[in-house]
Amino acid sequence: MNRPTDPLTQMQALRERLREAMAVERHRRGVAARAWQPPMDLRATEDSYVIALDLPGAARESIDATAEDGILRVRGEVTLPEDLRELRRLRGERTLGQFARAIHLPSDADTTNTRATLADGVLTITAARRRATGRITIDVEE
Image: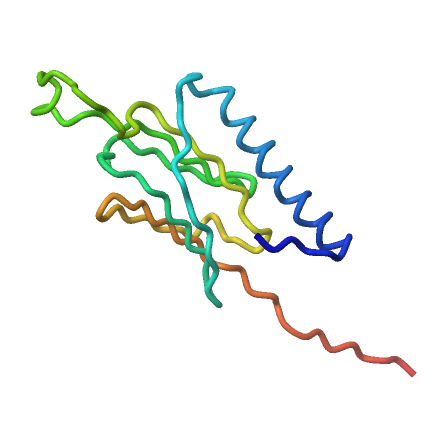
């Protein structure tokens, strides 16, 4: 893993990690202690931010996603399919139970303009990026 050598870049990276950790901790207070965090990616395009969370086995009805104050919160539950519940478990490696994830979004993310899809065990949430208003012309009075 390459670490930045510039102190300012290191401080910015640390600040971002702290901000995300604090958001996760605030969110955790309202979730059962057994909740797990699904792995995720946050990527950017010119027009939007795309968040992808791995949620294999999660039903759409069990997922709740909200965005407020620049923080995207996703919570829900992954349960064992009904046809497997009665079988005796010999080995279990899949993550089941309640999950929760709080993701601090960049400041230009427009959380009022989002959409989400669940396909192949991946929840993809897309948030538009707000555009700068453009150049302002200043008239000089004489």
